[in-house]
Image 1 (cartoon, rainbow over the protein chains, first blue to last red):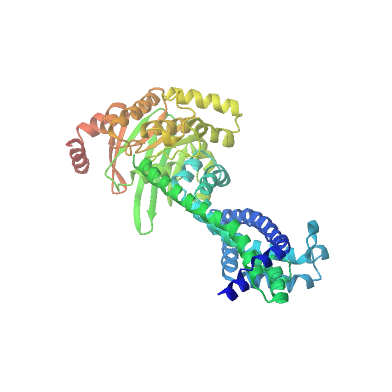
Image 2 (cartoon, rainbow over the protein chains, first blue to last red):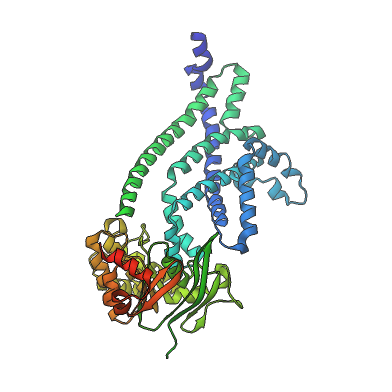
Length: 247
Length: 254
């Protein structure tokens, strides 16, 4: 049994390597914050494109739906590999873009951010869509009857209500995103999983993995608890809401 | 005879296989109050929603203040074929389910479209909204969210919200049907006052008493057509058509 603990839970070992793993974990957080913000923004944009009315916007809606379906269906790892394994060699693209070193971050960082943003914006678009579709149709009818354009109705009436209906699924996606930042290790970006792996390879001790896992847990577990709370609170709201609608 | 405020000719509307409106004509004069009665499924609500193009008809002509709001020659089939802006600036509507914006206070419900659509300043919109909400008896509820208002109060906010856009015609789509009985009167009183002030109104309702008292004309619809129309005294007291008699018998016998 002590062999098991020494392999996975060697606290002295964790203490020795804490600094290294923690520095790497901060990089995961940095990917998470940037890709998360981009995915939340782009996802809303996609969801709104998908809601555009009329025949005129049919092609745009079709492209949007295709984008969402494709990126929801490909493994993130492959998306990241597609970017890192091709983009740098497309010589018709300016070098600053195909091999970006913006804000002092190396190109693997940006390939990871781009890959995660592409995929998670598709996920987020679906979450927003659920929120938008949960807003009763009468709301749009009322807004349009008052002379508001489709865009105004979306901006002032639908989206403000939609976002109050989706914090729980949104947080769930963000939890997944944080965990999926470890996939960026595949392009040799020194985040927590990669650094832990290097430590393991040198020492044949897996405690660095556990240490990295604990760091994720410290952030994601409270988020998961928050999701539960939001769902409970929302159920209360729905019960009250339906009562009002009947009255 | 002066130009009718609203003129609808040969309105047809179908939902898939179901033909809901089978050629409906209606003229409404300025200042006139027309009540549309009929059993559920008669097409009366759909017809009303055709007037402001919430349900654009597949066939037929609509004139608002003499202006043909159909864009192309003949009739269009989709919302794109109609002059939506022209209609929505002149026609207000109040719904059965109120459809107030739940994330906005009573006052904000009434100011939002004024600011965004009519480009009124915040101060101007607030002054107008306050005046209207006072007029419908809600001067003390300006900062309440709809959730905190009774159904009757919500419906009066909805009326104020529509009036804030200075409509020339008001549509009422069964506005008391979702209300508890004791709250119906306050909404009908508000509508009665509006009628007395000379507003042109088309009212789809089950309130026979209101129709008898307030309407200049009563229209009875069934099966997607107008069966009978005329002054309330005639249609309600001495209906000519068998279907009207049947319906009134069922409604008044309660």
